Length: 335
Length: 254
Image (tube, rainbow over all chains, first blue to last red; front, side, top):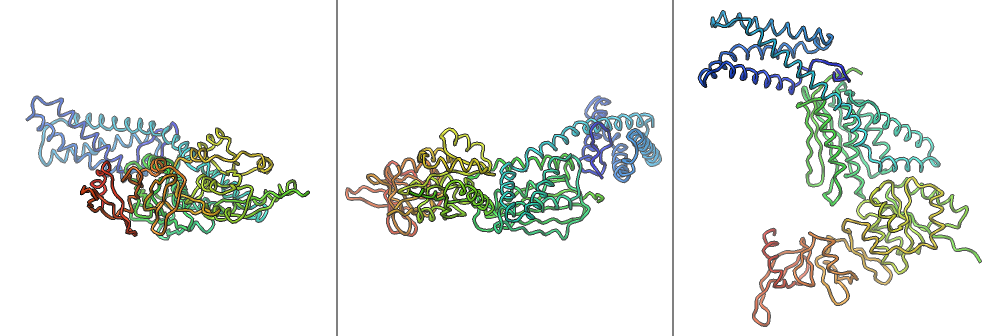
């Protein structure tokens, strides 16, 4: 699945995203309150009106969310206008079913037409809202690509790597070739359109290429431990998440030390989540963290753009090590 | 009359960077006589090496672990005949601006043969670096103090210093093992290592981590005052009346 926020195309939101579901809940209940307020003459009738309305709206709302989440993939395969028609038809049908059921159970009064109008209004408003939000985020995503480019790969790294490659050319031309190829790959990804999610395995390949360039410079001082046996191979991740974090780990964890240090990368699936854990040695010093914070803010922002509330990034500085923990929803991609 | 070869020392924490400079120096050697006097992979080794061998010039990397190039340069000025210094750096926008202002020599990595050759040819006419300029270039505090004893440079890690005491012309640096005489001003040291030392007297700074406790003492006139008890040594230091408040402040943290 790709994020359906390509420039200038409208799409329904991802109904399996927790943030989206929460937004729908809040908006619909907010509208219930407004309708109840408009029809009320005093506080007693306000609560009455709200209870009356909720008795029908809440079941419809919960059912809608369930059905939408279930039909999410099918809906996204349709063209935008067809999918809107499908959602509206679905909502009207659900309203009718719940209305008839409540008539049968509680023989409540009130015309079905009123509920149809309310449903149409709410559905229309929500679709409009998500369309606007999608459009608002779309430039943010292309902006994110630029940020990924600007925020990452310190110039320091580029010049030092070129320097390392130059030193190899005379003694070990073969290794110099590989190093230049790695460097080219790294920059290709960096400058690519980074709005789409990428396979976690590709992100790991990139990280390995980056680390092999750093290994060239730092030699024995840099040790890497990969623990990715429990990683779902088809998981998706925003591109350039791992590399900037590793660059921070090298810059703040390995370079300031004379003795060797270990960077540990642990990735594993955990139900419908994927957890990434990075650890590097670290010593509190009067050293400048602005670069570090910039990278973290950038990654946090991009995770939020892609996954809303379902992703998180957390950092902790223990006595002599620094941890970054990322949790993202497990979305399956195809190679 | 043969020309004395230029003796060069290479200092960089990354082996490939040193290899590269070595290659370039061998290219330069075709035109001017050059001799590589040694290589070092960190600041401490660099200072040891340069104390032992007489070099004309050091190619000194700025960003190195533990002790950076700017600090190494400061310590090297304690040598009787400090070598000329050319800094090398990959990227350091702020530092480079300051280098230009003070006409400090530097080479950008990757280093170009022509630039290196120019720098080496100019060495004999280079004006020596001034310590105050080096201090200005380095914003952070040093990790070591250094003293020259009979031509040798002693490095004293800051965290081993128990106290600093101003005497007539010198500052006495006291570690658990011994004393050193340092030609620097106490006020300057206090400013540089703000937060590490606490002033207990007009002429004395004590390392916060070195304080073990406080003791009440009575002097000859029967007046009471506080003494600082230190870790590892028996010597106790008097707290002046004006600095008495630190007894409470530090006492709370012990």
